Length: 115
Length: 115
Image (cartoon, helix red, strand yellow):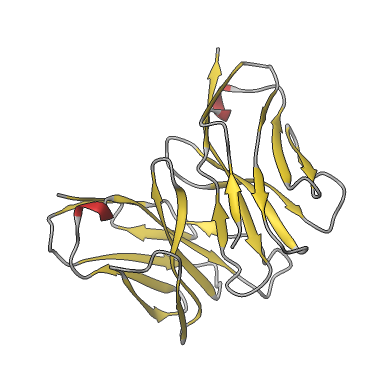
């Protein structure tokens, strides 16, 4: 079974600075997807960015980018120019391409933005 | 209007009561999921359904049942609620026919408290 580990329960960053959230995962599969979801105080789960395992190029969405290291099974999220609206819980998730295709989530990192 | 809706948004009930959480979607997706979120544990899959006639247990299905009344509706029931079922419950959908089949779209969540 796949597991996803987020080793930073809480992080904080100064507004306008850059922060990196860590995620590692364990799998024996070669074809899968990885995601970062944001959960603000409204509790809505919002997809931030996705990465396909067979693509070597790191995904980027505006101020959000990932560092995907497939051999190391690492998938970190970098947030540049942090804004107050970035304050939220961030969840890393793994999706298998086989069977139920379910999402396996990490335990989350709470990000605080310091004005 | 939201594409994935959940009712109720908040519910307080007593131990032993039967309760149903409902999920509806207007996205036309065939796949629906129920997840549970607990502090420090991330989201875990309870049940999933790939179509009206296909319902499967997730990793934590004990104490829960589901019904897929139509492609657009997927209900989660607690036959006899217990306090450790106090959690935030999310419904999600996905559509294997689309190019972005790997993405799951989440409802706003239902916060359930069992006293």
